[in-house]
Length: 91
Image 1 (spheres, rainbow, N blue to C red):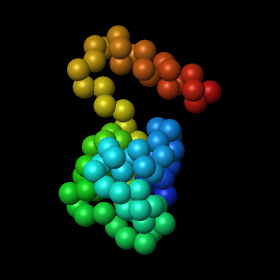
Image 2: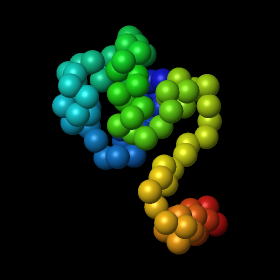
Image 3: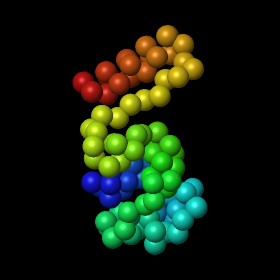
Image 4: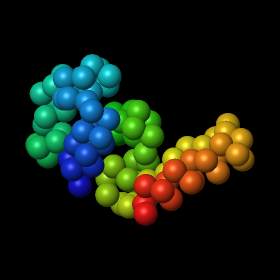
């Protein structure tokens, strides 16, 4: 599940494996190995990946299906605008 989630998140942000590797401080080959389910990242790296993509480690591992948008620091009006955008996209 991690392999699929990582690739999905990477592609959604329009990153290739080289770019993501630079961001995380690993090689393209390392990203490729994760996405091909050849190896798994360390716990520290899993946390770094989750932080970068704004998801939980449980989401990356397939233990949780829901994605959340961090709205900390936004006003109620800003949060309402985001919710309206989400509703528009869903419909």
